[in-house]
Image (cartoon, rainbow, N blue to C red; front, side, top):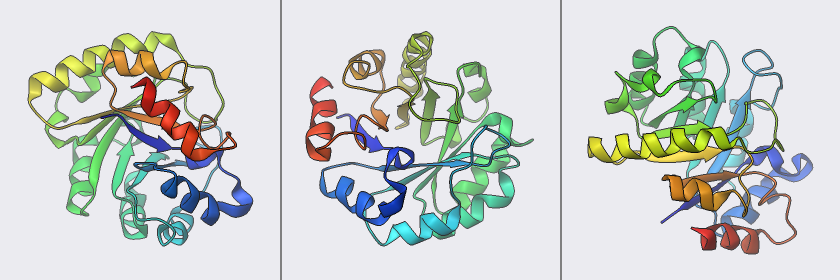
Length: 216
């Protein structure tokens, strides 16, 4: 079953608590939180304090995507703030294997994020530590970008690799996911869809989430 993870970046920042409760009640499986530092990516979002404040508004898993560098000094803070899953980029620190070990030692699930230009080979020696692989179908940093169809082959290759490993690794896609692009992601092998404006930009969150599920 395809899981839907609405991206908080597209929510109304003036009433985030209400927004989190609303998508959880509308049937979202996870809440996706994009953490951006204005250095690793060209935008600034929010930090662990906001994650902690929102944690009491919903019980669904918090899927925290760290777009910050260096990433290691902040892993403990986001785990303590209530993250259930923490994903990071291979380019965000010198020792990816150690960073993933740290996330798991903190009691969270661990994910690796592949930017459009990041090769699958970045996973060669860390797959056994991964609970999730996130394929970015846009260049990270801003919401509302168009889906990069070039990433569909990467998703399909990763699906085969995950299946061959025999491990229960979620395969997530983030960027330009809509009811038009979601079927292609799912056909390629994705099983978690991050949706920003496709959920938070719609008048009825329950209908928007249901529409994404139907295409799966």
